[in-house]
Image 1 (tube, helix red, strand yellow):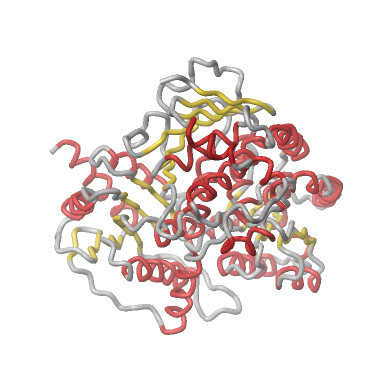
Image 2 (image 1 turned 90 degrees about the horizontal axis):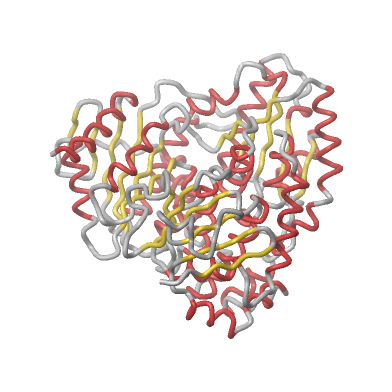
Length: 536
């Protein structure tokens, strides 16, 4: 197969997949120019109202330059007060871009995107007097971030800090309840671009302000996006157009860093693509893998993407394509805009509205009902060591895992592992993804709850209904009260897992739950069980 490469604006997309027919569809309808002109009719009449207020991201980087003097002044003010530790509390699009930026630049940023009490408590740290907490929520009412704000506020007060306002920064839409609260409290508030949805907000205040406070040169990111923007109306050499064709062409797209400088972009792209395309029974399933050529990265039903920070090493012969079907290389600011454009193009081809998320609220509503009614008292179907088994006739962890793998034998199936645990101290569990991928031809995803509810959770419920689900929960040996609420973090996390479980079971999908009465021992059991499959 011949290699196709589109490059410009500092970024290149190279592929060995024959996408010429799909590219012609986009060109024939002048899609590149129409999106650049913010044509809200691109995705059909049902999507037009939503699209008309969600296309600000196409050129939001130009308005984001207004943030530069504001952020510079804030950084100076924090430095003079001895505040140099940055904690970001945000879910999905409100935290993923800053995490990618700071991981790529090796900058210290503590991200809190969980309701696990152990992980939240660890994020508080010892020196609160040197800590600024960024509360990022577009709506201003996200339950996780509201809970984080409350517990940090109490912690500051308990530590003897009488005026907590210098230790908070709020990022939200103008007029939200968080905006109003910030005004009342005297907290610094950054009002984000109202015409940009959360997952397209990397180059707005949501992506840039926390990164700048952690030490990133956000002007450089804006410059990179602006340079890439010179390519977006091209019909012949348009990297985003080529990437959009690739996203729409496959059922599954896998992501891996190629080692040339960008870290964690797959997690951000996963949310962007899952929430944007996974609806109406359609969509492209995104899967983050560990490295190019990792187990499950390649397959007949999927396109493997490698991404990196430099385009200089790519040649027309596809030198970066030994272990991938598509290579995307360039600076991080260009990546953000390229992937956003590509996802919007893919939405046009797939035939969905790439800006709504109709099924995300489902699990939220279930969670609220459970919190009001009380947690369900479930009895396990079996117990194996430190693991309680629910939803299966199997009596051992090994047999349960084999059952889930057997269920992936159906056409178009994928296996989703969802862990409601501490992704920082118990992160070793994510090794289960490549281990399981060794035993099935189906794609295998792994997500930390409730983080994934703002990402692949939309695809699970709105995308193609072929998922096989394994949920992993754990007992809580520590807990945190949420001031002003009649539930704790442990209760909230348990209710979120139950709410999502209910939403998926209502779709009659295969669903097994493994509950760890001892988290460390239970994780070890699961990993050993999968390892045992490999040697059996």
